[in-house]
Image (cartoon, rainbow, N blue to C red; front, side):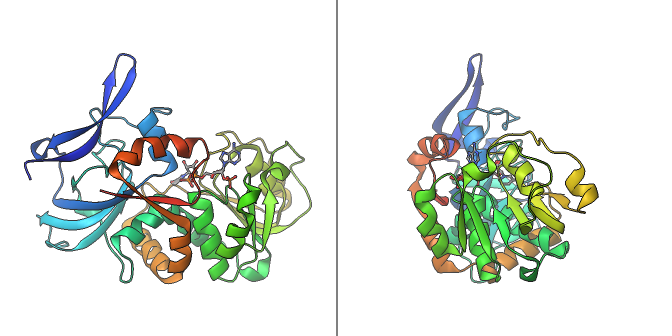
Length: 327
Ligand code: NDP
């Protein structure tokens, strides 16, 4: 393939433009492995990149798409050979390095994870960065000693990508899951995924005291801001909160009280630069702990031409669960 189909973002005086192009293979960036991308996905960050709402893209022209799955077609690295199935998320893909909304990607072998057994390329992208981040949150809580015996776990933004996969994983792992959502009409769906209780997002939306009634042994938070502050305030002594997102805002209006008076821990999660052994562990835990029927219930599949409208919709909170893109 001397050229391949790709979505390309260009910088203009007025902001950015996005178009489908034939992208020359010779313009790919440095890397020792070439992959025929079969699937990608639309994460919240892709929404920010494609719309230009936040400065996610830091190199132009850029092929957006912060993750992909596919097959190796050429490799200069002994770790990978032609035909190997791989998944990649993070490491600046779609931000500083040409990304996943393209038929071909050239990347560093160090960034690639072999597709774990039992997970197809489509499954891997149904999980995507969002689901992988949910797993990182759960692994962080586990490392902190959170177990089902320590009490219910709160998941915020539960009907979103990170949230819905967190609900499914925690439910399978035996936790009592309280799912906070602004879409109470999705309550039945969230209960089928693994939630024991649905909490209306409004309950966490108003600024509250930094110490409230202790309820949760752990929290997976994908929204930040006031809801995160309230979640921290409702975490039991010695419990932990894994914070990975900002769908409600970047701020965190709390005080040190929960940390110094209850020993609550705030665990920051950045999925982009996680060392390879933890990446491999997270993907293999996903393959083991995520119920495939539940994954299918979370997922919708779209074609290449639907990426841009879907990216807009995710920022408006209109996407339920996860979206796979067939490339
Ligand atoms: P989604 O849009 O799929 O999910 C976000 C969910 O947050 C929405 O579905 C909604 O859930 C809830 N939400 C949206 N707006 C608000 C609001 N104003 N107040 C309260 N809740 C709100 O996005 P993703 O799951 O892909 O990503 C979630 C967050 O995690 C994003 O901020 C993303 O940037 C971040 N993220 C961070 C990563 C990292 O490495 N740290 C990696 C991956 C994601 P509901 O309808 O149930 O209320």
